[in-house]
Every structure is written in C-alpha cells, then in structure tokens.
Amino acid sequence: MTDQIDAFFGAWQLESREERLEKITDTVAPSIVYVDPRTPKPITSVSALCEYVGMFSANAPGWSAKVVVSDTIAGMTRATVAFSGKGPDGTEQTQLGQYFVESDGDLISRMVGFVGIGAPTKF
Image 1: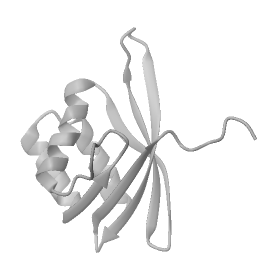
Image 2: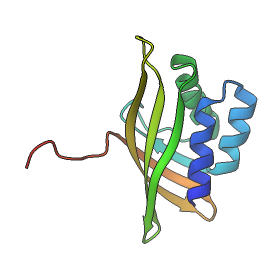
Image 3: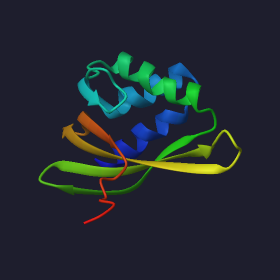
C-alpha cells in the first residue's frame, strides 16, 4: 500500500492534467473518498480528486509532496507527508500533513488528511 500512497502524492506536483489523472487513476479506487481540512466536503470521484490535486501545483508551482514516513497496522496506513518548496520570500519551506489511508485491494479507497502531525506543543 505504501507504494500506492507514494505514487499518489507524486501526482501532486504534476502540472499536466493528463499525467496527473493517469497517476491518480492508477493509485485510487473508483469509489475513492478523500477529505482534508481544505475540502469543503468529501471528494468522491477520481476526476474531482484530480482537479483538487491540480490546485496544489497551480497554487504552489515548484512545490512537491512526498511521504517521509509511514506505518501500517490492521489495514490502516498512517503517512506523514512533507509539502516543500520556495515560499514567497524565496526561502525553502516545508509543511507537514498526516494522512490515514484505507485500501481496497491494491488501491487507496479512503484517505483522511490533517494539517501538521498532531504533536502537542505542551503537556
């Protein structure tokens, strides 16, 4: 499953809609459910997911999304993703997100993303 998740996030920097759609189609189930803090409601089609992912490359040209660590237990994969690129001031920046992923066979069927990695700032 981690190969599919890596490939899915590899599509985030593809500017070509056709290439992005092909990569996403190869990694997610036709009945995909995707949600993160920036989606107003769950995305439930491959084409809508392709359009959503395309907004990343359009709004953050030159940025990449890469899985930096993942683990799986009881069929659920947790993946930490680094979104990296040059900020408005020209310096390299990285923002982390954490995703919880379920699969249907070899394809991603449900993905829920969170900003950050949930680490407490104080105890």
